[in-house]
Image 1 (spheres, helix red, strand yellow):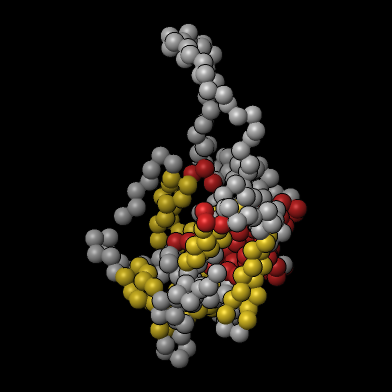
Image 2 (cartoon, helix red, strand yellow; image 1 turned 90 degrees about the vertical axis):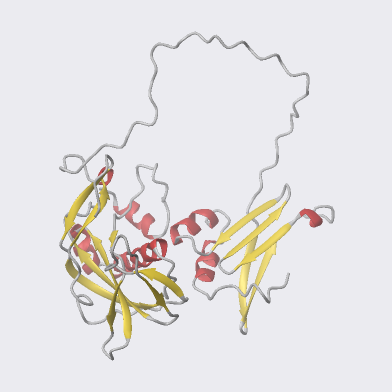
Length: 311
């Protein structure tokens, strides 16, 4: 049973079907089913290739996105302006259900998620195919964030409003996402408080150090330029690291994980290529170096072959 907290409110959702998207799992993993009892969690094994249906549904009790200009919306669709402290940033609140088991038309096993958003974006989805694709990508990313699933981007849209009926339920939603004047709205807490009367400090001043402080600033590590190509069944990733010397090579490290690459060259370069990150995060990290598209394309590829990796 979900209980409201000071910063979250429990809302009743009765989603209305919008449209359905079909994808597939690209990895073997375990997920928790929505019919699991709180005291007896029920995990089910998902095999690579299993069909995954995503119901995009509408409910007015989900907070609407904040007001924004067309330019701000387009920037969000491109993965820009993801800094939540930026008042011009734009986002879409989403409430995602747990997975539930179902079957496809041929009777083969499948799983279903309900992705519920405010109906104010419905007309935009109908008029703008790019915006609809943006909503689909947000839904897939949310599933990947809240589960261990990695979903294929080779998707289709079945000629059905939903796979099964979207489930009615109660959900906890952040009260700060609702607009001012809404019954569920709650202003975010004040993080900085002005103090009018400044007390006199009784702490004795520390003696000045006799050690000289270097006047030369510590060099800032930067992300190196990089690219990748597919050569048969292998992936070739090239890092451009001008300025490296033989002296720092023994101290440099390159770690390769199935969905991550970490490169560190002391005083020169640092790269953390996390292929499990959201598209918007990859765009933000690699946008300045001009390699955001490389990162997004590589994310869509298979896991890296760690056992057979060569540097």
